[in-house]
Each structure stands twice: as C-alpha cells, then as structure tokens.
Length: 287
Picture 1 (cartoon, rainbow, N blue to C red):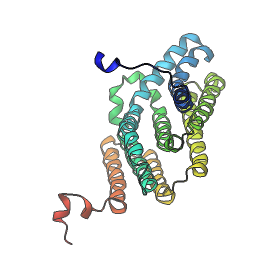
Picture 2 (cartoon, rainbow, N blue to C red):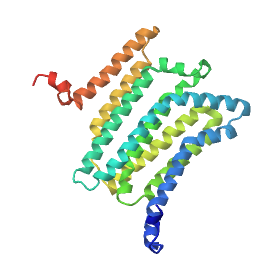
Picture 3 (cartoon, helix red, strand yellow):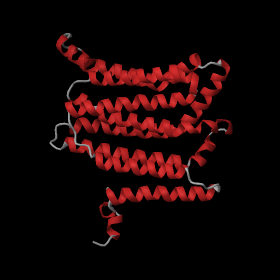
Picture 4 (cartoon, rainbow, N blue to C red):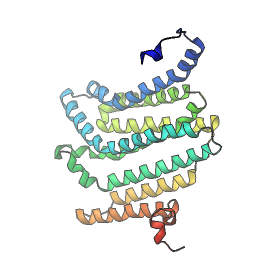
C-alpha cells in the first residue's frame, strides 16, 4: 500500500484533530469506566474483606456463579454489534426515532425472556458449576438484572453520540462507576459478594436512569413505556411465582416453570408478534 501513502505532503489538521478529540475522548473515558465497572468488585474484594484467606474463597464462589449470568452479557454484546451500525445508518431518516423506540422495546422483551429462561432452569444450569459453588447462585438474578440495565444504558447512549455531546456518556459512566466502587468498599466487609452484585445493579441502574432523563431533554424519543412496563411487570410476577412455588418435586417444578415461560412467550406473540405476520407460519393461518 506504499503508493497510497506517498505523493503528497502530510499536514496536521489541528481543527479536525480538535473535533475528533472533543468527540472521542469522552468515549475513551466511558470505555475505561465501563471496564472498571466490570472488574472493580474483584479488585477491591481482597483488600476490604476482613478475612484474607476467606476472601479468595468468597470471590471464587461469586466469580463462578456470575458465569451463568454472562448469558445476558453475551446477548447484550451481540445486540450491540448489530445495533450500533444500524443507529448511525438510520440517523438521517425521518422515522429514525420511532425505530430507536421499537428497538429499545424489543431489546427489553428479549432480555426479559432470557432472564426468565435462565432463572426457570437454574436448577439444571447449576450443574455447569461444582456443588461447592451452588451457594453463590443467589447472585445470578441480581447480576442478570444489572447486565440488562447495562444493555438498556447502551441502547440509550446513542442520543449523545448523534448530537456530538459525548461528554454526557463520560459523566454517566463516572457516576455509575463511583457508585459501584463506594458500595463495594463499604458493604463487602458486611455482605460479602452479595454487595458486589447489588453494587453493579445500583451503578448500572443509576447510569441508565440518568441517561434516560437527560436524553429526553436533549434528544427526546417516544419510548413505549406503557408496553415496556407491562412486560417488566409480567416477567417479575412470573419470576416471583416460580420462586415461591411450594413444590419439592424437581420435575413437576420444571414443568410448571416451563408453562410460565410459555405464558410469557404467548403474551409476546399476542401483543407484538401476531402469527399472521410470521413468514411460513402465516400461510397456515386463516385470513
């Protein structure tokens, strides 16, 4: 490629450099804060837990149990790779904000579905881990909810990129990071790894809410909060029912939880995915 790099004079465009740094430097801060959010608890834990020997054991239990919740992280990461190019490609279209609102709605729907699937079949998924780590499975719903908040925060984050005010992303990430670090420092000595799980939940939750409320002033998008709220409420109710079912037989319990999951899927189909609109299936539906 050397021919492409010769034959002209190199000039430093200071104005372009200034604009590039103004846009991208806050994103760098955002990225560093985001990485710190994911590893801060594991860095802090050995320093603040009272028993240094026990700290290694507790941290191992937390790390192992959290791996099951990484299903949500994989889902949000896959969405991120597909969604980011889509956002910038549609930003000039008239109905772009409506498309962003729909994308948010369906992202939440499918992350809730993933949450319920993991939690309903946790009695099977736990065999991924050794029995000694099962005691830490109580962090799985909290960590999964935190990952969901992070995904929603990412979904919301495009408004400041589209209006070239990326500084807001740095602000939100630093606030969330500060909350996570402070909760870990003060509560790990008392609540062990449960503090780590709730720290992520609180940090990502606050960053998500800040991005939403500031974004509605700077770049308003009409999210269907009523429909989203119904999905969240239904998922929460189904999850609580599954947790408090007074059934000891594991096969019967899994059968009932499967019915609860199918109930959530049926609500999705009835509300947002009518069978008549699904290719192949629609040919068998009477008009």
